[in-house]
Structure formats: structure tokens, C-alpha cells
Image 1 (cartoon, rainbow, N blue to C red):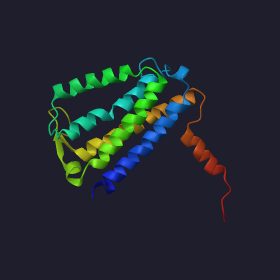
Image 2: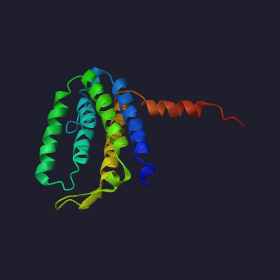
Image 3: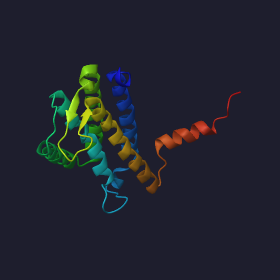
Length: 178
């Protein structure tokens, strides 16, 4: 069985998304325009990007697409960018993170082993030229964790200690039971 099954993958994604939401809640809305450098996404742009990203994976895998052409991918990127731009406020971004995250997790739970093992192919120069649906869906979680790491660094730049760091510090401060 792949990854212990789609239920475990969904639960794992829910954990990742909950941690992203915690960061989104902790960063004040007046800091959502903050950029670590001028040529990177702002906090709001990054959170909107993470919120919208799973949607194309749902469409791709629900529709059973087995080959991704360049034009199809570019069209989907444009659609995602438009959806990201529509998320303007902290409230809208948090709602999208919650709703779209749960929609993706529920979709993951609906997949069986055969669906996860199916192969998707890509045109040159994409390498590798094929991936399983499992790899692509897991990539959604990996993508979010990448951006969450960036957001945690941004929290530090804003003078905040990320919630996961605070939890670890609290555990470390506890006396060791003998």
C-alpha cells in the first residue's frame, strides 16, 4: 500500500495545512504586504498561492488526465494566478486556506491504490517524463511545506517566533521525567 493509504496522506496534508493556517493567523494583516526582498512574493501572495495550488491537482486527477501538454499547464497557471489575485484580504485568504485545504484532503481520501499508482506523462523537456499520481499529489504537500518554511523565516523577520518553534521551546523547557 502506498504511503499507508490515501487516508493517511489526507491526514498528513491536514496537519501541514493546519500549520500554514496558524502562521497565516499569527501574521498581522498589516504585514501581509511584507516581502523579504523586492523580487519575491509578499506574505499575502504566498498564502494565496498555497491556498489555490491544490485545486489544479484535484481537477487533473479527478478528470483522469494521463498526459499534461505545455499549453494545458500554462492555461492552468493563468487560472491559478487569477484565483490567487482574487484573494485580497486576510479573511479571504484564511477562508480559502481552510476550505480549499479540506476539499483537497477529502479528495485525497477518495482515491484508491490504483488511482495513486496511475502514471502521468509530460512532454520534453520535463524530466522525469512521467510521475505517478501519488508523487504529484504528495508534491502538493511538499510545495506547501516549502512555502511554509519561507513564511516561518518571514515571521522571524517580522519579530515573531513561529508557533512550531514556540512549541518545541516549551517542550525543551519541561523537566525530564526520570
